[in-house]
Image (cartoon, rainbow, N blue to C red; front, side, top):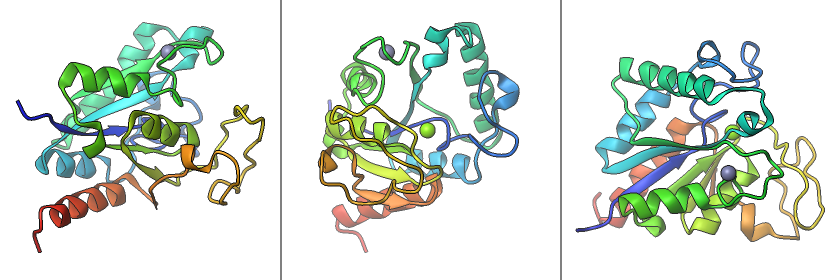
Length: 209
Ligand SMILES: [Mg+2]
Ligand SMILES: [Zn+2]
């Protein structure tokens, strides 16, 4: 059986609104608002032959800010909103662990991607990780995918192994240390733009006009 290609999507700030006027946290179904173009992007990727998975860090579960039932309700709403626009996900993977738990699934670790790849026989080198934070890009790189950064929000990930910190507004600046681990292959402004890039590249690789 030929292995499938996939696009892994970060959730908050890529698929649905985060840090917008009306959404500061996504702790329940009423906090789920699709970003413009999300359903179109997912439909387009599926039509091009990609499996589409959400991979999301949900440390709030481990920290006790939300229950697993709350998280399930959020994901159910997300799937309902997508279904209304004719789009569906092939799966949603989440890491419920506390940020300092040291698990293998919390991005920037690649565990969620590796697990999905194993379970669904995905070709990671033909797959993409799309995210709005360095930790998303680092997870994609560690898993061996291509990476696309959607620059929706300033990066707040901190406490890197080299001790450096990312200040607001410096997300796109080239860095001397560890650049390869979290510098995306492409930077775009929306998930839809990322999907168009992926579909165009696929056509180029197949030698189509
Ligand atoms: Mg995000
Ligand atoms: Zn985890």
